[in-house]
Length: 107
Image (cartoon, rainbow, N blue to C red; front, side, top):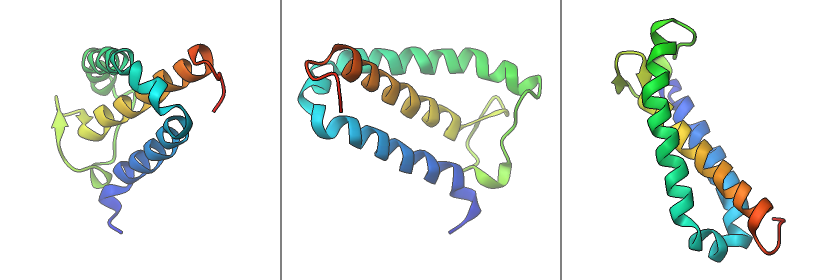
């Protein structure tokens, strides 16, 4: 397995795992709240586009160029970063909806 895809593979694996657990038993409820989930993801992406380049320019963090696909925004933010915040914010929104607002309030 190429090392280049390590961030992307971890993102896909954990994204599928967490979303699968939440959606397996709460699919109809989460589907009825898909607008909320989409809004959370869009706000998270907007926040990432505004703040992430600042941290990258300050060298607060960095991504190993050998472990990303090579698609960069502002030369400091790889595509995997945007995909990561989308998966993370979606999973967080789903978890909050399931555990805080669903009729079952459990997985």
